[in-house]
Image (cartoon, rainbow, N blue to C red; front, side, top):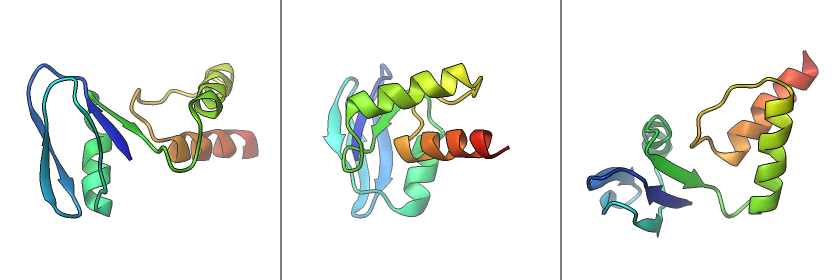
Amino acid sequence: MKVTNNSKAMQGVHTLHGIKYLKPGQTDDISFTEEGLKQAQRLAFLLIEDDASDSDLDREDLKKQANELGIEYARNITTEKLKELIDAKLAS
């Protein structure tokens, strides 16, 4: 997954190979542990993009759909989680 540090300070994330530090504004491909991904997703200053499954255009369409449905979501939500929220809203 591509991860961008949008904070003004160096940040560390837990990867499959230990802690990886990202400088402010730095983007890097990260392989997360399951727990490391959950922790990273809680941090609003990290932008996490699941580049393996969806294009940016598809992600923007999902965001537009979520907004139309009145779904609130974190700015750094994964595309997969956004799809889950939309599916759950449509099923209810």
